[in-house]
Length: 89
Ligand SMILES: [Zn+2]
Image 1 (spheres, rainbow, N blue to C red):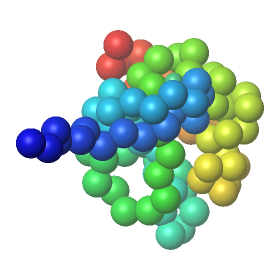
Image 2: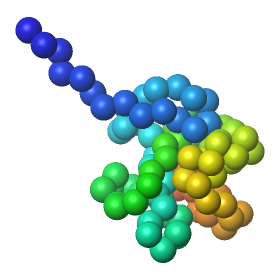
Image 3: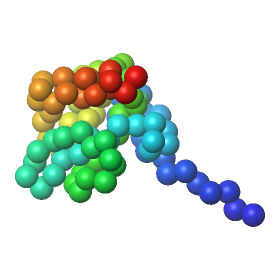
């Protein structure tokens, strides 16, 4: 009997592995545009953050999110993410 594994991703804030569902995906597309992917299906390079403001702040401050996406994240994107997280919570 095999236990089905839930796909897990690492939060760029706290560094913990969590089920994808519990994380917000941030994606960078071919045009180098960074956006929030609520469907988890947008094409591009993705990074994950827990749905809480603390992890978002951490991942932003440590630049781990930027390094993960290999791009710079503007204040605007950060604020958008924050809004999204607040709405979710
Ligand atoms: Zn986290």
